[in-house]
Image (cartoon, rainbow, N blue to C red):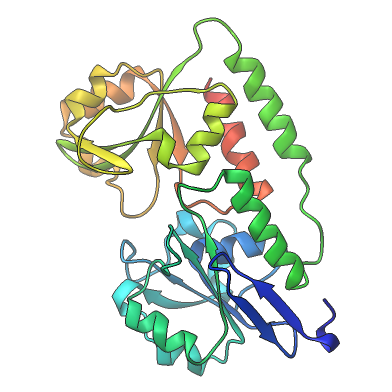
Length: 286
């Protein structure tokens, strides 16, 4: 839509946002901001979630130039008045279902929505990965993205992965997030859109089985090792434990020595470019 004729967008809560001009000063949840960057749009600022620290998580930031992108804090530390003082004309948030804005306190979200348009994109378990990608593409187009996404690299990566997974005795893949020595979160593949997308391409993703936790099963490294995976998709976000923290856990060391590891970011940019990088990395490991 032309900036002269106004702007409107219906978000994943079903809420229609209308503005007299196309928004140009966007503040976004870090994953959403990184996705918009992949579409050629530079948000003026970003904010993180309760899992993040005092600085933006470089894994979630993707290609965003953090030096020229203001960070408004994360989770409970986000000051809505500081966001509003920066003069945004749109806030882009994400939800994991039910329309609830993810990453910041409900009162902060309410304060922002009373004063600036807020658009919410659902990135949760009930939407396929390509559906999430399409919603961000639609939003980016409405905001004047300078070019259409290039899907060729993603198609090539997906074709390569299908060829590899069609071979006999395909590799067994386990997705996890390290919690610390002695403790690991094993991902339930059906609850993560990017893991479900890998399954449709033929990747043999191991299910951790019954137990507490909707998205993860929390257990110990001995059990992770017992799954005997060939490839591990390891969470690289800042809230995951690092190799330095885990090095004294013998089961973790054994798992690392026996497997090929792929960097997995559950909150990667939801763009063709971001997905192509991930699928290509998995294919390389196979």
